[in-house]
Image (tube, rainbow, N blue to C red):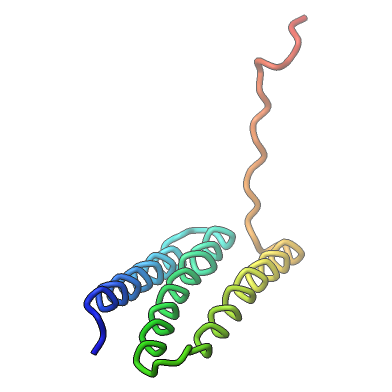
Amino acid sequence: MMPMWLDIALAILVILGSLFALVGSFGLAKLGEFYKRIHGPTKASTLGVGCTLIASILFFSTASRNLSIHELLITLFIFITAPISAHMLMRAAINRGNGIRPPSPPASTTDAPRG
């Protein structure tokens, strides 16, 4: 039987993980251009999976009374590969010209010398 504080911590981590994953998927579905859409899953969903895997580490380490490192390896793999794959996708979009570049900032009229 697990202590009550561990049950509460696990529930909070799983709820946080699912909320982060929900925010990431909502960003993927609703944001307009490619560069905005890639940001949601790489940041929020990575945090969501991380919270869920930390909860899994705590649960299985407590249940088996041994340190469970399988989830730690999965977490490490996701935290390393998600930003790299997002960066590669953005670079490919820039090179192909498929991504929409943000507009250039307007020229400020107050900085121009008066003549």
